[in-house]
Image (cartoon, rainbow, N blue to C red; front, side, top):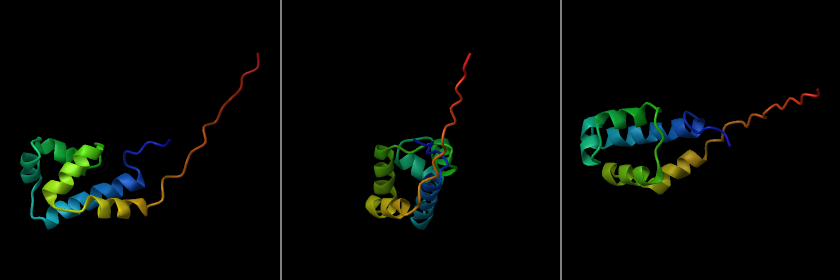
Length: 93
């Protein structure tokens, strides 16, 4: 399984969350206070440097006011990253 951090799907998920937060008129600080986190945590999520677990995602959806199913449907339309084949080198001694 490929790393998901900064994958095309992760980038799209972050982009949608940021867009929804801004549409709701919330600053990062407002959102952080509402979910009882530091603003730096919200900044790390929005910069793509931090993964979002399922429970956090649902909390963000509820706090910001978006439909989590709709957002995930959008993210699911993004093709997953190409799988890289691991090269194996056999050493015969």
